[in-house]
Image 1 (tube, rainbow, N blue to C red):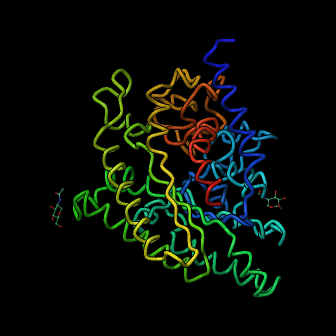
Image 2 (cartoon, rainbow, N blue to C red):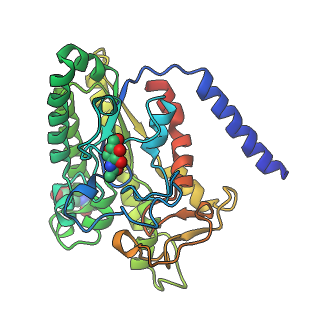
Image 3 (spheres, rainbow, N blue to C red):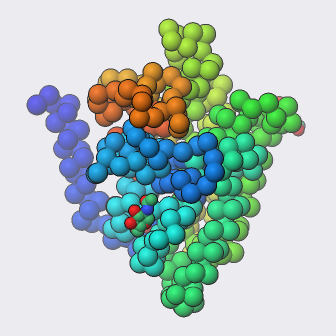
Length: 354
Ligand SMILES: *[C@@H]1O[C@H](CO)[C@@H](O)[C@H](O)[C@H]1NC(C)=O
Ligand SMILES: *[C@@H]1O[C@H](CO)[C@@H](O)[C@H](O)[C@H]1NC(C)=O
């Protein structure tokens, strides 16, 4: 075996051994809010153009079934839930047939296409964060009826609230739709998003949340569809669009600072608010794609890989023979392999705080 791969192999073996045996997790449930990076299929139950509950989505799930996850396999939140020993898949809340036992260990309220800016969600006709909160309130009252107030309080005390959102606000709304960029410069728009994060955290605190994990934005200028729309030649000269990625990075810095301020203001209350960076890990994977075992970073595995997403990535479209050689599954979303690598990049935070 090539020594580098042997090294990588040994590294994974040792990381897995460490995280599986030494760390005791106190988390009893996981509640998830945000966009397509963490939506396991809530959009299946609403009227929107943003769906993925058809092949080839989900081809690398155990029974090759599409679920509404925007990837070929699992999402990062599925990996977190498995790692915490809760379950292997975080189900969508809008599946009304989930049992109380399934509901108790956690669900996702996320909706592909959602943003911190309500206008983003409106453009995509999906479930806004405010509505995701309303569903969480409904969840709380359903479970309170079934289990009693004491049980719910203790469940929430040790529950992790995971929020992954923001890419649609910048990539789709601010830079692509013709409204917000005429109303706000990029700095003011980033501040608006961060202000909405603050309001969202406060609402969840009021509902009994105590442990928060936020995921920042990726380098959005490297998403295949953004490269396609903004390159001098969408086919021959493809490269990351710096302006977009810089805006995402600045947002991440502001988000991180705001979360830290909130955490400091809540010191001694037992409340935990952590930030996980995926920007640098994903950029590292893109820039060193060969080292990570990938053949391609500039386009997605589905179809031409330049634009296909949602309904354009469907059963009539050819897919690449081996998705694990691709960084992107469709023109926006990473493959399961990349989601797994990103999960590994922040598993230390999971072990420390959850
Ligand atoms: C909804 O949840 C039930 C219970 O877990 C499951 O059997 C069913 O397959 C789910 N429906 C969909 C469409 O995923
Ligand atoms: C953005 O606009 C604000 C006023 O709303 C101004 O203070 C700030 O300097 C502007 N920033 C940039 C980068 O143009």
